[in-house]
Length: 378
Image (tube, rainbow, N blue to C red; front, side):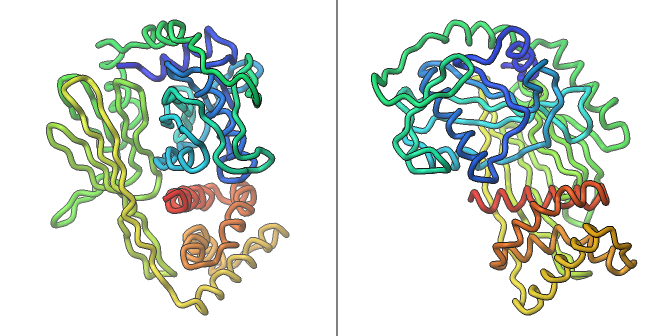
């Protein structure tokens, strides 16, 4: 098993950006330009490495390799994005790698790309790139190539050595379990489970019992052996279940207008462990968005817009207006799910305003955008 934190360190320590490795301060796949650039790099790395893994490390300063981190990103549908825009798409995964010095909720993103052995190309136009374009890596740059297209294996031995140096050991695993339970989450209920005598999953959260189920909020779940954060949420509630072979997470999201709040199942994630030292992660979106009267939502939408304008103009809000503002992220999300397409643009526009105005409401906005991203990609 590969310790992904060690893998990131080895990539940063021993390699400049090259034909099997790229690094980014952040990616932005919520807009066309960012999405197009991301797909270009995925395509180029897949074509330049037909027989080994390629990597993109996200959350690193370009000049000095300082690890600054990015927000936790649990987009389990990223393979769908690649499949939609690329011919002969590679297998791709996005993993969240915690580093001890980063603030809570910040991680390093690790994108792993595995070619299917055939030439990967853009399937259709996106931003300034045309359908049919083929990209390769030349040093640290992803460039189009229109002639002499041939896949060459030149990095397999180098990548194999880097991955070998990132193999896990018992000391690292035990230290990570103790750190997770005693240091990172001393104020939360923590637990762990060993699967197939090889894999250790730790989880922590605020535990709440009902008559039939146990729910967790402020949840953090980590696959210790590989230093991969499987789930993180400061707000939503989840249920956790497991047996000898699987570990399952069922996430709920709280939505509603005003005081009429209700929990809706959002997504079920199942990690399946095998005897051969491998595991797979399957996800199923369960979300059925609540439907509301359009006239009521027009009023809510306009109220939200007016509140943002007041914040922008630094007008002091009344108590009732602040209460409405605290629900703004969720109500914008409800508006979008009920056909108000411009609500997404308003949420994007609100981010810098709310980040300065109120950290709690800003966190709620990020959670709402995370849900929106899951729903859109599905």
